[in-house]
Length: 334
Ligand code: GLV
Image 1 (cartoon, rainbow, N blue to C red):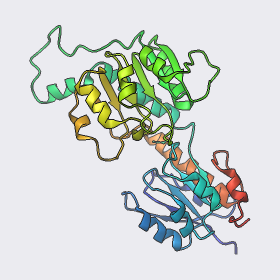
Image 2: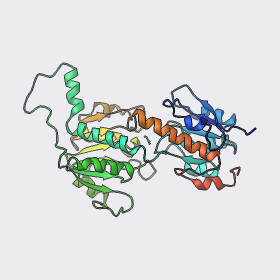
Image 3: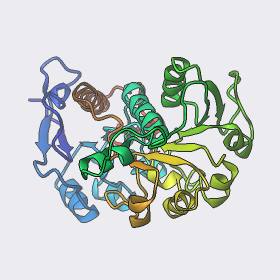
Image 4: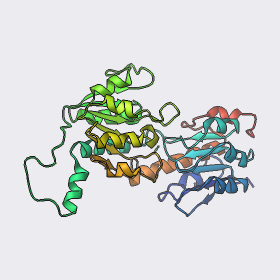
C-alpha cells in the first residue's frame, strides 16, 4: 500500500477547493486531508503543533505565517506549502528553501478580480461614493444640489500604476475604456510605453495612483509622507496590494490636511485593525481586503494551490513553485 501524503489545510476553503488533493486521478496517491474548521488565523504555536504531528504538505492562506521555526517543526517531512494567494509575504522564502520546502502561490488567476476592485476603488474614491452613501443612510440627504458631492472625473485622467505585473496590466486594460492616459513605474524598466523610471515623477504626473507591488523590505512604506506630498492635491491613491506598502498614519494625515483628494483602500498595515485616523479621514473609501473575493476565483485559487501541493508531493515541480531549488536542498528527502 502506498502511503497517503498528509496535507494540512489551515482554514475552510470554498466548496471543491481541496478536490485536487483527493482526486483518484493523481498525480501520486490521493492525500489525506486534515482541514481546520475554525475560520480564524492559526498562530505560530498552533501551526508548530500541527506540523510536529507529521505533515507532508500545507495549503495555507495569507493569515498564516511561516518562518524558520515553523519549518523546523516540519522536521524534514514537510515538503510543500502552497499559499492560496499571489502575495507570499507571510512566508520566509529563504527559510523555506533552506528547509527543503517548496513554496507555491496562485499568480494570474487573481489579476482580474483584483483589478476590478482597484477600479471600483478608483471610481468610488474619485466620486466620493462612500461619503455620499453614508450621508444618505444617516437620513441627512437634503435633496439634489448642484454643488454637493463634487468629485473628480475619471475619464481622461492620468493613471499612474506603481508595479506593472499581471494585476497592474489588468488595471491598465480597464483604464483604456475610460480613455485614461496610463503611465507606470516598476523597479526595473519594463520596456513598455509609459514607463517612468522615477517614482516621484510618476506621482507628480498622476491623477490616480494605484499600487500593485508585492510587499517586501523594499516596498514597505513605499508611499509615505514625502510620496503623498509629491502627488497632486486633486489626486486619488488606491491600494489593493498589501497594507504596509502605505504608511497608514501618513495617509490619514494627508487626507485630513487635503494633501491628496481621496483614497481607496482594500488592505491595511495591521489587518484586521484599521488605523482609527484612517477610519475617520475624509475621502477614504475603505474595503475589507476583498480583492479576489468572488466565488469563482476563490474556488479556483484554492484548487490551484491544492493541485500544486499535490504535484510537489508526487515528485513533480508545479509551474507556480517560487523556489523549485528547494526540492534539491540537502534537507529535502528526495
Ligand atoms: C490576495 O491578497 C493575494 O495575494 O492573492
